[in-house]
Length: 279
Ligand code: AMP
Image 1 (tube, protein in one colour):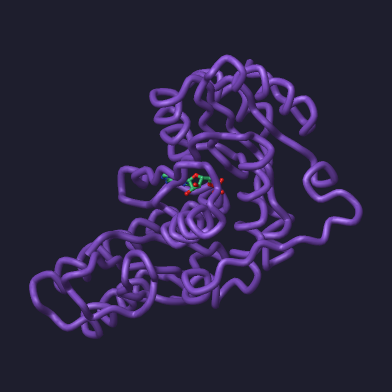
Image 2 (cartoon, rainbow, N blue to C red):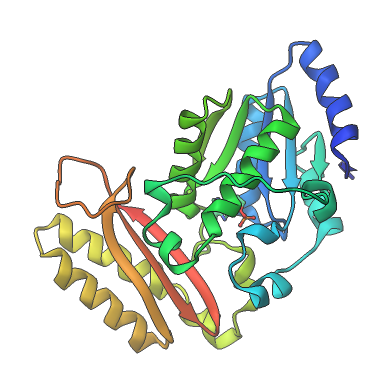
């Protein structure tokens, strides 16, 4: 099984030796309950770096909903077994007190790109993400950080953060891994009922059709309204947003020359699902 390190001091001594030997270090930050999406990031890091660290930390600061934090799946032993199949060099799984000791008072807050969509629906979420990612980069001294496109806005926030703070890390965005019916893999999917799971693929199907219609010249509004109708008809309780945005700034965009992205969030079975695709 892959070695699990829990303190920054132990991680630091390992990382220092690697760096002294001139090795490139890749980090894959996760909250655990690993699935193929996470493993694809770890495999990419394995292929591109000398050393790979996967971090597993359910970051309380990025949960705006206490119930979601409480129910978040925690499967450290099974995760370490999966990671030994990649293999990664180290699992860094610090406790909450290790990351946020008494007296911790700093927040990293990225403006602009953090504000709409997820930022609006989940106040404080991206401050939590930006703070923990900055810390994880500092703790691991990684040369490269691997992030999934599944969380597109988060990826843009991290890219902005690294540029704005001159962090010496190259951010690599990796393809979304999906189930056979198109549902983006997520640690929260296990909370769906069998009935919910059976219709969850409609989220990806609906935004895919909407994106095709927009490419074919249909109005954004019409295409998005139809997609939202499909979700409700399939049994989604609530559609939080379906939006066509500038892929980088996440601001509203009607400039078809700029890369655009359709992003969606909707509730099914009391589980919040998100997805996004290029348009
Ligand atoms: P999480 O554990 O949900 O915080 O995710 C950790 C990392 O894995 C993030 O960079 C996510 O974007 C990425 N990730 C999660 N699900 C997927 C997926 N289905 N495909 C690709 N990357 C993913």
